[in-house]
Amino acid sequence: MRGPRPSLERELTLWRAGGGLVAGLDEAGRGPLAGPVVAAAVVFPPFCKPIRGLRDSKLLPPSKRARLARIVRSRALAVAVGAASVREIDRLNIRRASILAMRRALGRLGCAPDLVLVDGLPAPELGCPHEAIIDGDAHCHSIAAASVIAKTVRDRLMELLAVRHPLYAWASNKGYGTPEHLSALADYGFTCHHRKSFAPVIQLLLSTVFVSRA
Image (cartoon, rainbow, N blue to C red; front, side, top):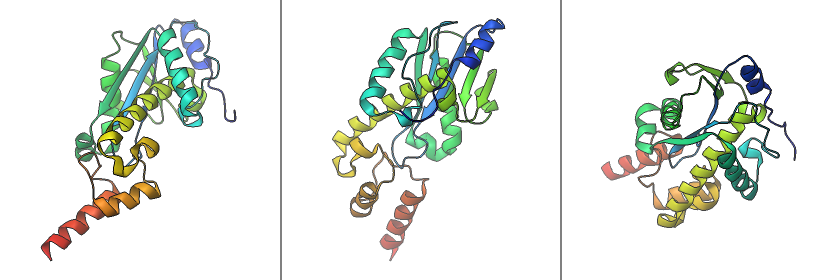
């Protein structure tokens, strides 16, 4: 499989320095037009062995991602998930809603990590000691594990929503703006699960308002 293999190098450095518990933190679902944003936090036992085959969740086929999610849950000291709703995304913006989901995941861990390794840029709003790693899901084992958990949970949520809203093909596109999804938006309008602050949905909302006033 192509792509870098996430390593335990950063975690090992922290453990050897007496850093205590380290949590990996990542989110899934920043880009879709529909559905919540989901974050996961994962804490592994200090000096654990890496999970073979673990990668950035975006590089994994669904079946392998699901298998790795089960392995992560079986080997981790703690795994927790948090989400921010579509309403919160529209009210706060996607960045702040993602951090809210991350804070909820950390709050549900059941243990207090000494340091959080988070994918992307620093996020002071997390309110805890953390280290941001660009492309962390591709390079850091704990973040990659969190990425896998977050994406499997979010994908399952979208599959469940697809049963109630089959016209939008969420079981396959997971809420992203695929041609099929955009076509369904144009034909059938938006649902309560669509993010009305995202451009394609805003355009549809505005056109609906203008037509109704004409």
